[in-house]
Amino acid sequence: MIHENFEMAKKAYEKWGINVDEAFEKLKRVPISIHCWQGDDIAGFEVNQRELSGGIDVTGNYPGKATNPEELRMDLEKALSLIPGNHRVNLHAIYAETDGIVVDRNEIEPKHFENWVNWAKERGIGLDFNPTLFSHEKAEDGLTLSHPDKEIRQFWIDHCIASRKIGEYFGMELGSPCLTNIWIPDGYKDMPSDRLTPRKRLKESLDQIFAADVDESLNIDAVESKLFGIGSEAFVVGSHEFYLGYALKNNKLCLLDTGHFHPTETVSNKISSMLLFSDQLALHVSRPVRWDSDHVVVLDDELREIALEIVRNNALNRVMIGLDFFDASINRVAAWTIGTRNMIKALLYALLTPNEYMKKLQEDGNYTERLAMMEEFKTYPFGSIWDYYCEMMNVPVKESWLNEVKTYEESILSKR
Image (cartoon, rainbow, N blue to C red; front, side):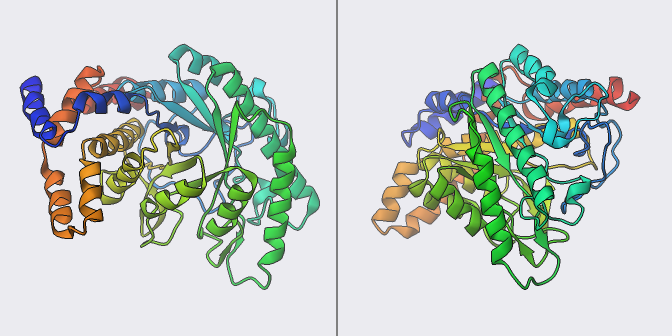
């Protein structure tokens, strides 16, 4: 029935001039950067592991989380086998492998990620990277790159420079540029008496970080804003306005996390504006529930609208899409699979929308038909196209992937 349903659905879309096969080819070329930290609840593999900090929290105690690099890579492989397409994996600095030797974050080197690179080479995937400026004794007061203590500030500057060097190494070894994204937790719990000075320090720290010689064809720099966090409810140094200005002035990517804004503020509404002034931008797609809670991505209105904004503006090669959620209350391999498949579904949905026709309706002032068509396409036979795409890409169709996760849980995860 998959083929029969596909052929019928294909005709429905072709009536609007939509080439389904062309949509498939475009979708195949879009890599999603899948975050490794869903698999182990952001624990990492440092010899001296610290408690989570920086306003980050992971809730739940579902059994089977990865406890070492081999388990994490195994779990990622399982998830990747259930997701159509060729994607990337996003690492944090705390996933370095140091053979039991204590290596502080300002001293990490490419050699500490050789196993990740060899693994990525074997699977033909790219790697992205993030310095880890939380869960460390030098970040206990909630300040890092904007810290008034010069020595602490320099420690984190050195860590970020080391991270960019690792990103350069990834790009060189894997033949695919690495996106190295800087996010910091810096802020204050209560109203500050001075907002300018911390932001001056952050700017100076970033200037020093980006002054380090790193090949920009191998490493792409991004900066990520946030509205507030636990412990920084009143003020965050690295606000959206700060990083937007810094990125534009210094030719860096501005990374938008869908959970880092007001509850009623949508990232989808920002994409077109930013593409007018930036060659590229980056996303961390999450799902905030009342706050930046990093729930698993679902196929909701905002996810569809994000995908539509990317597709209708011909920006599939200009927007670097990454995911960022962590849920320890459900099977972690299933979380990766659900979230990533939904991101790809949203892109396919956008590719199967008559975007040029919709644009013309708006330009002509025909808002009645615009609204009617937008609503009708929500119930077009999109599911039949998605099922065929999954089969074509040799991954499980519909919910059958869940059986593979259950088997994996029984044979592997439950024994950890």
